[in-house]
Length: 640
Image (cartoon, rainbow, N blue to C red; front, top):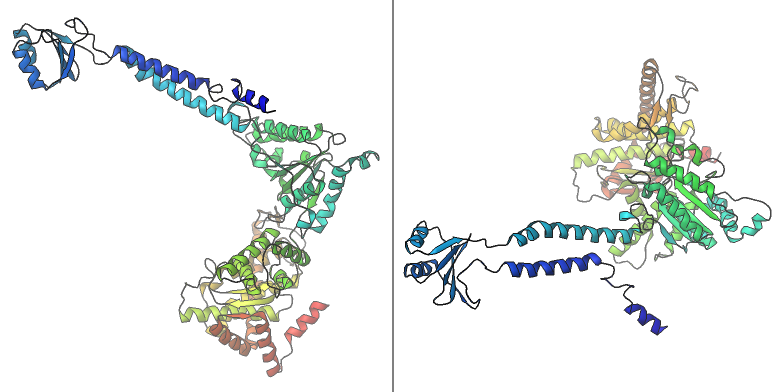
């Protein structure tokens, strides 16, 4: 083995640099020839006075050369662009002097009867070589060298633009189902894929065919990629992952070539899993190609993907294609038909139990205080995805490390949640006492309406410490659990809470400010949605006036389909409803005037109060004033 190794090293056809770079050898050889020619032709051969070639060369000032000419010691003079050379045959010497602008020189040479003429200081051959041939050759050599490097790195085709070698990540993931939490239903859906990859003969005997493609659908950050890796990790098979955008280039046909390469590599490693992330980048409906037609790079790539999914067999060499997207509605129908991505698995945002499990998974590698209550953090993070929860744990660890703590404590986690929801605290942002008073009443108005309105989210914290880009204060409302449906009274309650801040300013300060702009915008949107999308008003009845195109991405495009007359009626109804709710909110605040004042005093001094203290203030006020307990009524209705 050692002899073979040494022979290979000496073999000129192996890894020698010069064997793989003939252009480099040719360049060195050409430069050497040029240097030789330059030396041969740059010598001065214009002097007929040189008799033996053993003359002495001297550099002298022009004034001394002129004196030699006047003294008759010079036989021949040659005048160049910058240099004058003179031959003295008597002394067997060639004198060189820097040329100066002397109009009398020619007259002097004529008077002394000295032969003179012009000579070129450079040779025509070297002029052409160094001015034209060599620069072009060097540029071409550099270009070929870079092209060969790109070809080597990108996998073999010209400039590597058609290969997917560097675009595909091939690995055997170590992620298991135990590392994926909060998506139990999705894990159950993909377990049969794992079973088939492990024991294909069990299904082949029965004549069953496993789906070739499985589409993971869900909002960003819910763990679609992690779940795909867990499938490969549980099955212990190669995992080829690539992004959908990696197939698209400006050259038509390149994407299709990369699709072919991807599936060829997967077949060689079968059984294997191919994972295409953000498949909507290449899988958009071909019917939406527009005026430019459908014969573009994206369509060519999609056609090749469809052909490849039809072409390989799962019985002899099982290759299963997993794909992920948060926009399933834009995918081409041919991609979703039976035999391709005919099975869709929803990877949604986690519920309360799921958030608890996800938090525990990410807490494994973090030193957490034993006093930390995961359930309390899970309640504060309703509506957040798995990626958000992972970021919260990391942010809490950074906060604890900044304070030189030995463990991550509960207050670190709560602060991390508030940072994720409301933004960073702006302690350096100074506001006047007048503005602080306005903000305090505003936030206390939100908090009191939230705690005294049926269907509203409970208050977790009220603060007048500025956070984020523009918030001078905030009221943190968190639901006990994720809500997939909202009843009409719950939507109305949300509107009331949003109006509570502006109403508190008017009732207790006597003048309104600009601080409620976002609250009013959100309240208006909720009322409009109740009318135009949810059929919760008599103005439109059950007729849907607007459609939301994207259910997974918040703020998706809305399609409006109603007349101008309907629009006027809608505007009037929205205004009327908002006025009615605003009036009711002001009445509630007036009834709880003492509670508001107590709450404002505490919040102004402490700058932050917890939801438990808000509820305590309200209950004490109701007892002192013999008011019926709105809180008790709300709790009873919630239980029912």
